[in-house]
Image (tube, rainbow, N blue to C red; front, side):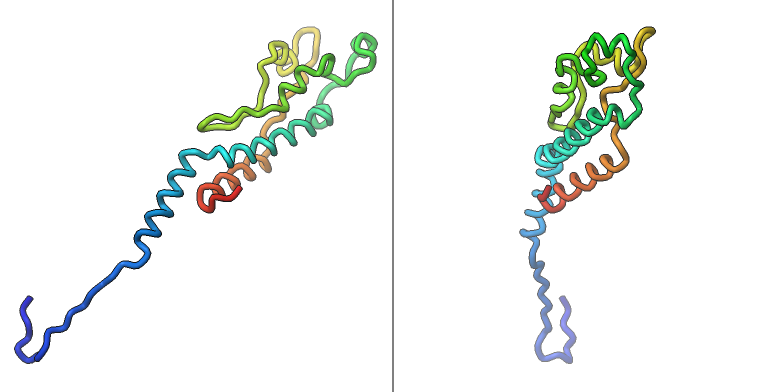
Length: 150
């Protein structure tokens, strides 16, 4: 560096970056939480289970057709879609994977209720994801990735 001959002493400017290590650690934490969002999925799953239970209790939010008189007599007046309780119980358990949380059923006869048949009306047992649930899920994931809180 050329020094102005009129200056008696050269002037030095030192720049220090403070907090670089801390920032790098925070970015690493963000990446780890984004790659493994299980804690966020667990919270979302609990909300899904609650909403599905309410949906089932409300008979599809009131959208399920009533049972026929014949079916009611056969079932002793039971709630629609409940004979043994197997379908309802299967729907109240979420599955959490590395990239998703889901709620559904593998009970084979569920599809007949979901889509209806020639002999039985459509009574979808799985609640469609509401806009509120979708928004809550997005907020939960964002809060977990950014802050580590669920």
